[in-house]
Length: 426
Ligand code: MTE
Ligand code: CO
Image (tube, rainbow, N blue to C red; front, top):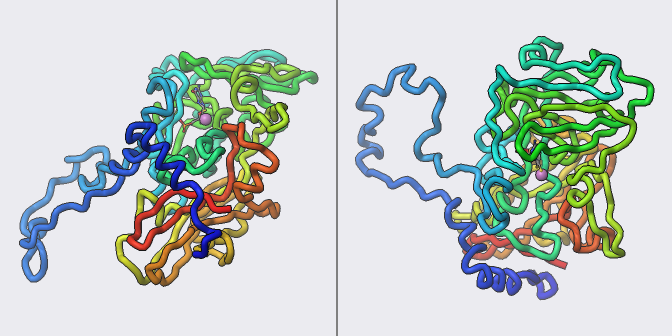
């Protein structure tokens, strides 16, 4: 690493730590797995405890439970980010999982008014407005309709939103953990709209949530008739309450704010409604004072999940597997490049495992670590040829006033001792 590559943000982060009374430093501690204590009596040539006794019988755990040694793997929030836990976010522990499908219990959650506990028997979905026949569906009605299975990523537009003005949060869970990818089962929205019959003037839909935020967003009809799903299962199970039980919108490739949970009502109209979530929120203030609006699409993005600040390198040097995730709202991930030297040299990563249209892709790069400092980066390219920009390139167009849609390239600084920090390089 030469002098020009020196991380720029160390002092900013030090100040942040001091200013937040340990807030940033505290982010790292709880997620580093404490290795379970070893008992020499279990090690060869002895016969281990678990080999010398009968285990619990079937039925002891009617709903599967993780090994007790894995219980630290959990969603986490950042208490100082939001004023109340009801209008807040908990982040997916990206550094603790692999593959491309997020386990249901680890999917990040974002609520504006807490988790609605909907009784499925009393659940209703209304469709009205510019339709021939207003309809009210029960959950059983929805489950009786033709259904499809699709794996899609779901990313909050505010993911990486804290990083616009420089490196801030120390861990992939916090910088990139507002993304998950599950297999949804649901009814294409167009099937429900066909039942109701669209009037010729129909152009826009309003989607409303059944939580006390009654979150509403306008949806262009073209997307509704394309790949939008009214989903009720994730990874085969019914949706979890945190993620919208019993029914949520799934809008592949589009910002998660529009994926209305606890879906209660769809109104068909001829123009957008200009709700709070598409005016004062979920717009992007540019340097010239203008704001971009209706920026639905989530552009290609990637992040290295291991090694990363919460998953440091513990083996001093030698063979090292680097891994991460990439995704694009435009379609499939075609290629991911990784750099060990802050973007000077790039090498193609290997994509492995299922990675479909608008779903997470998993990439790996294997290298011999010589124990010197590294600046790790990953850069995604999607099937349309769109290439994930550097943070500097992104700021040229977007300035630094935005919260949403930050898909800039992330840099992790690996120190000689294997510890890792969130930094930026120019
Ligand atoms: N839908 C309702 N009804 N209420 C909400 O607060 N939050 C939105 C969206 N849908 C929200 C909602 C936001 S901002 C995001 S990022 C996603 O849900 C989060 O989905 P998840 O909790 O399943 O991760
Ligand atoms: Co969101």
